[in-house]
Length: 195
Image 1 (tube, helix red, strand yellow):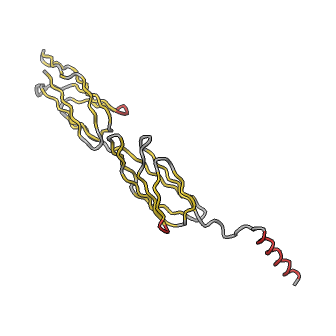
Image 2 (cartoon, helix red, strand yellow):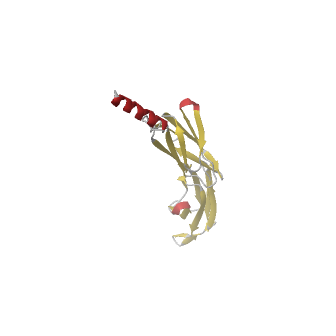
Image 3 (tube, one colour):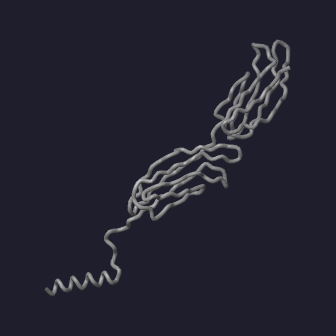
């Protein structure tokens, strides 16, 4: 009986002192990283989950805390900035948040590519042109005639042509050099005429 009273008194004392809750934490957190967008561009990333939870995040990484355990859906949409369209990968993903746990997800944006149509004229059929197309990220492509260049990173490109000789005849290009802007999801064009 005395032992029982001592145990009851100890439990009462622990409760009064705010003893540790043996149930542990009942919420979790979710860290979301967003990369690939230019500075000051707002990502279009939304998070939905249990109990009607809905929040928008980005462009910087964010940690959502005090989340009810369950399945959360992260949906990202395309973003336009400076004439370039950026698409997210993945566009939709689902993560599980557990009580006391920390889940994570990431969304990587990338600029949609463009293309360049190069037209070369004025050379006899057996004579190859000497044209170099250069652009962002060290891009360089040598062309010997008309061509369609695809999957190009948006940005400024330079089309440089050089004179060619055949059977004692020299053919000079016009223009020697030209700048072309390739835009996201669009086709640019450049022409070189040999005379």
